[in-house]
Image: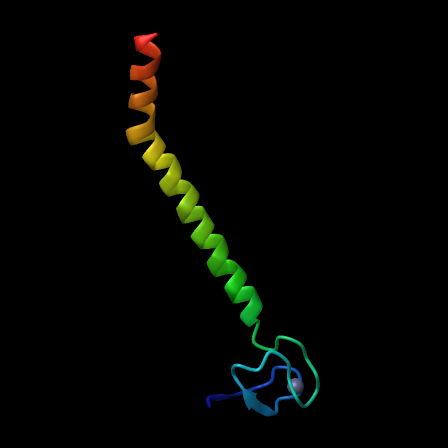
Length: 69
Ligand SMILES: [Zn+2]
C-alpha cells in the first residue's frame, strides 16, 4: 500500500489511513475534505445542468402551455 508521511508526527503511514495510528491525528490527508469538495462540484454540475435543461427545453414548453390557455 502507498505510504506517506503524517503531517503531524512525520511517521510513515498508509495514505488511505483515516486516522494516524501513531499520533491519532484524525483525517491526516484531508480525504474527507477532498470528498466534500468533489460532491460540492458534482451538485453544482447537476444544478447548472438542470437549469440549462429547463431554459432550453422546459421554458418553451411552459410558454406554449401558457399560450394555449
Ligand atoms: Zn501522526
